Length: 209
Image (cartoon, rainbow, N blue to C red; front, side, top):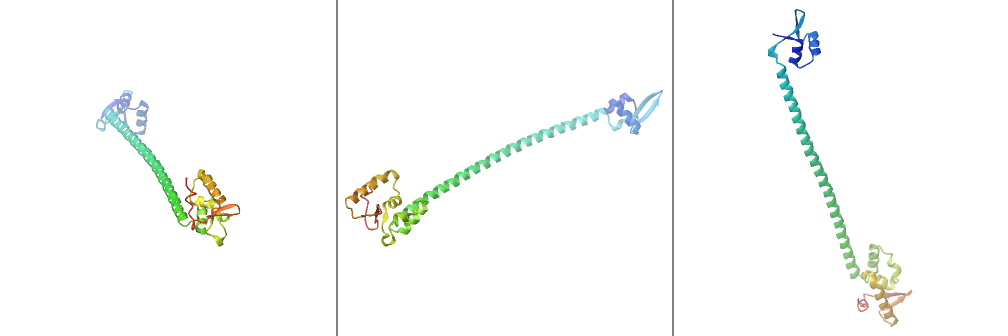
C-alpha cells in the first residue's frame, strides 16, 4: 500500500484534487490521517498515471486513425456516386439519341414505302386517297373525277404522288397547260382543272426538268 498526499494522488490519477476528495467521500479511496495531514492509500499494482496516460494516448490515436479511414471511405463513395450519376446521364443521352435515330429511319422507310406504293398503283383512286391521308394532306376526292372515270386524276394529285418539288411544280404545270392549249389528247379539263390518265398515257415528256 502506498501513501500519498491529496496533491500527489491527484497527479497520480491525473485528476483534480476535488475529484480525489470526492473519491474519499464515496469510499473508493482509502484515507489516512497522520499528524493532522490527510493521505490517500493507493495500490501500486493497480496502475499509475503514466499507464493511464499511455492508454488514453493510444485510444486517441486509434480514434483519429478511424476518423481518417472513414473520411477516405466517404471520399471514395462520393467519387463513385458521381461516376455512377454521370454514367447514368450519359446512358440516358445515348438512349435518347438511339430512339430519335430509330424514328428518323422508320420515317424515311415509311416515306419510301408510300412512294413506291403510290407510284406502282398510281391509277387506282383508293390507293391515292390512302396515300394522301397518310401524308397528312387534304382529302384528294375533290381532285379526282367521279367513279365512272376513276382512272383520271388531277394534275395536282399526280405531282404530289410523283413527289415533285414545289419549285418545279409551276414549270411543269405551265407545260401541261400549254399542251392542253395545243389540244393534247392525253389531258382532260374538268372544273377548270387538268386531269391525267397515267394508266393509259405517258407524260414523261412533260415532266422533264
